[in-house]
Length: 616
Image (cartoon, rainbow, N blue to C red; front, side, top):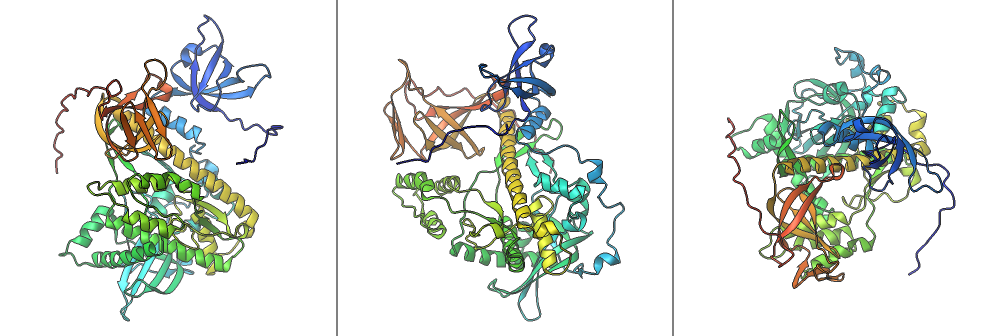
């Protein structure tokens, strides 16, 4: 098969940025020339001159490239600054933020000058174009400890027997006006970045955790999307309005679930939650019937020690009915708003699409299912969703989750785009013909633009030139897509670093896992207990190497006499290899099945000290 090929004929502009890494101090005494090893393995080592090498040893430092002489093996650069001791939590967090280009400096005075003066209250002028919804039984449902509450909900029965359902979203665009320093900073940051134990806000804390956060028992400005629905969750009417609300409760998913399940509770908040939950189940069922995908990814939650801030426990997140309840109404609001802003502004609506994967992406999924005698159909999202639903193996309840995790890996990335610059709007994963982001303006800049478009569409705010310029909207979408991707990578790097910290003082653990992929000389193993993925390598080289046979078609890997297939259960040892402080790794080795000369002996398990019982 012919592949398009090309060659580099010139470099117009070098994309050099300062790199984080560590100094390899020269062995030559008194030498001022040293090599620097970047944290990013794709970057070559850099030669720098410095007289403070002995001080910089063991530090994470930043180095910038100055040039790369034609005949030199390495580029030349110079020392910029030290970031702190390698392995230190603050230093490593700084490195991962810099390496993923996450803007995280403190907000400047110019930005802060556009914040409202405290004490702040809602004025009669604010009420002119707003609906007063303070009497409604509105409440929010979020993860524990959430302070940037974007959304709240209400549901009540109308006199005609139908339901009125409202999604109320923080009115951030009221406080952030187009083109000022605060707006430019939020547009550049693009998103809030959630690391383990740290949050990098898109907007200053006064807005994110206070004036915009829809906390309970305080008056807050909102942008509301209100539907009239029948008992079959069919939308009869939709309206959008700027509003003022007073949330009656800020609940966690678990608290909301407890209220719904407790038959002795019949207060207004609980009745509202039960109505929402009933309708959400119908909406979800209908969405899935239309071909929306239910995929799976392993999210882990660290329990952080309040004093040392080290991770002391690690578990995969549990999802409840109430998670799904909130999600259904957020999806519905996003779809309703997308349709409205596109109807009004067909050329400059900011939308979100999810492209269908090319068929070849599914090869691995189809082969994996086939190895268990199952067939996966991928000609449409609906066909995929249906075949995932029935893909079950007797006596192996976790199989379906593994298959969905694998299906997630086949997907494309969802992206923001401007409606006037594209013709394919389809969101593959949600099986929706149009979609946008409206429900999280505290933490996503895309939603602020969508709020502005919607406000103009309903006559609640005035427009401005950049909002109606499809080329500017398109350039903004490019930055948002880049920032979202980098935030995702930074979040993963933070989880990886905290996972290393977690395993640091635990010696060698022995855990059960499943094979997600087989490679030519390795198996990739998933440990469900920790949501951890690692690679077990087999040395097939040299005289002492083991006999390896890889079959790409099945796919399988035969090591000596044992054949590994995807989804096989294995036992592995997990330990932290910190021999290279800059590139610490979680190492996995095979325990079972026992293959002579390959498997490692079981580690001796030290008795764990008993945990003190919490004072309940």
